Image (cartoon, rainbow, N blue to C red):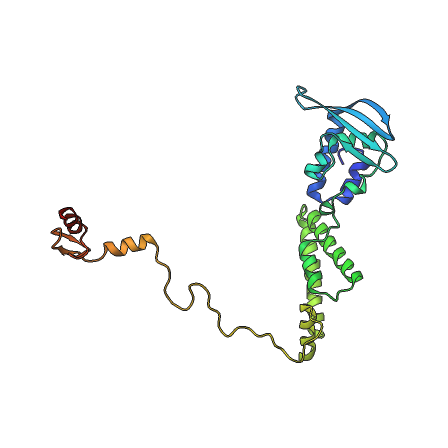
Amino acid sequence: MTLPSSLLEHAAAVYTKNIFYEVKKEIFKATWYCSIDSVEKIDGWKVVMITQTDKSKQLKIKCKVELKLPEKEVKCSCNHFIRSGILCRRIFVVLKNNHVEEIPEQYILRRWRRDAISSHLLAMKHVAMETEEDTFKILIEAYNNIEYCLDDFKRSNEKFLEFVEKTRTLKQEAMEFGSSNQTSPDNDEEEIIRMLGIRSIPNEINIHPPASIRIKGSGTKKRMVSAIEKVVAAAKKKTRMCTGCNQYANHNWRTCKVRLARESKAD
């Protein structure tokens, strides 16, 4: 922690690592580059005028932040939250000065949280339709624990190797458990039905794959020839004397353009 701020501790607990770094940057800049000009109360809202100074101290930005307690509702004239999904530094100044120790829950987007369900877990939940809710919560916690360990232990090669060795041991135990609980063919069929999300197999199956599928380009072994290939193939053809133009070319007297042009002028 670079700053003794309870907001920073709360951000580290709820946000993912990448988003936490962005929030940390905003809290840091709120402490060093923002100052409060005036505070007044209007219709139950604290209206705070804030001046932000950039690093070069050449540009000053005026901003109005409104805070409503105890609901912890905030408004900012810059609309930074609407654009990025993260509270801006001016709002953090107001929260800190009003002794708000946690980021309001309504401003923490679900997709930025540590406990957000990853896409592969969502897919697993849709496939395993009969998975109980409590079991799925334990599964989410297991994935979160593994991801947290990977993020932290990768900084130390010794700890990382120790973690990999433990997971290798657990994998071996899982393989032995799976081999000792080998299911019969009937149970395999039931397991496949459960994984596919099928409730029961109907007695009469009236949906079958088509006997043959014919799409564009199917049925022949030929492929489409490009214009360049056509030109190259025409250049490789043997030429012969055309009696219409008295030149060696790939056409004959009947298709000679010189003869046709000459006859059309004569007519």
